[in-house]
Length: 68
Image 1: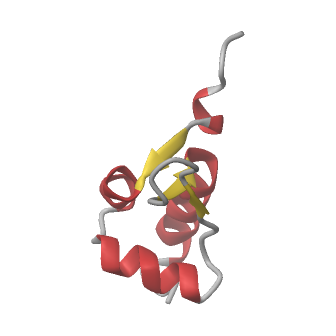
Image 2: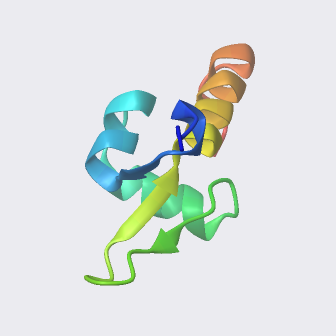
């Protein structure tokens, strides 16, 4: 079974790289409801769906940095 690239789960570090921000900014956006996070079932780390990260990046690019 082939997994769609956008269905991939990515780490905080990778999400920050994709969005061009730091991990703390991701946590702030999460608290504001701009980005949904899940917890990895084995280690409890935050993980994100690549599709959601790409959607947020698109929103940032379209509307400037005023996502906060």
